[in-house]
Amino acid sequence: DIYFGADLELFPYATPTLERILDDEALSCLEAFAQTGSGGIYAVWKQSDGRRPVVYVCDEGEHCVVSHSLFDFARLIAIGYSRFPCDASNEPSADEMEEEGGDKFREWFKSAFDCQLPPTGKGIACNNVADYPPFADWIRDHWIRPAVNPPSSDSIVVKLSNLLKRLIPSRSQ
Image 1: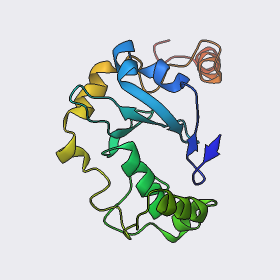
Image 2: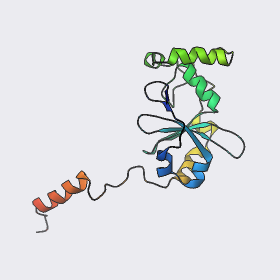
Image 3: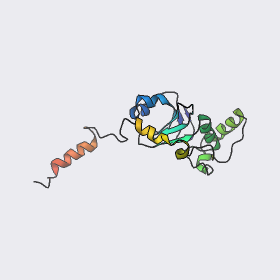
Image 4: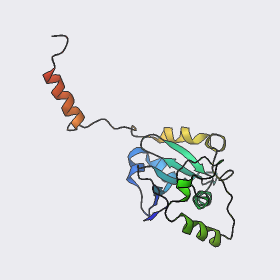
């Protein structure tokens, strides 16, 4: 596994998070490639018109388009951003710039692609609403699980609730 910053891990396998929350049609359109420590997933959204933006999907209901392409996503990381979506009109924070491995990746990226990096991600990061208005509707149409699952009958919440019902008389008695 490869980590970019404290909260972004590249991984070579399908993620169970997306399988729990999205239907099969959505899964066929998303190619997951990274996850966050909190369970959010970064994926390439394969669109019928050939566009391949990078999107963020979380089982807590958060979702957005992050960049126009995987290359642009990598450029944002090379610039120094490590938390997405980012405020691309500003330079990455000092904390982000000091993330372990950031300097090595930045130098590798500039050398591998023979390019200079701008100080901000402006023009690289997506304006979710203007660039990809259908993503919020699309993800909502393919969502199959509630963001927060109801507690199982053996959960501490249910057990505590049942205990309180037995110990505290109802007002109707």
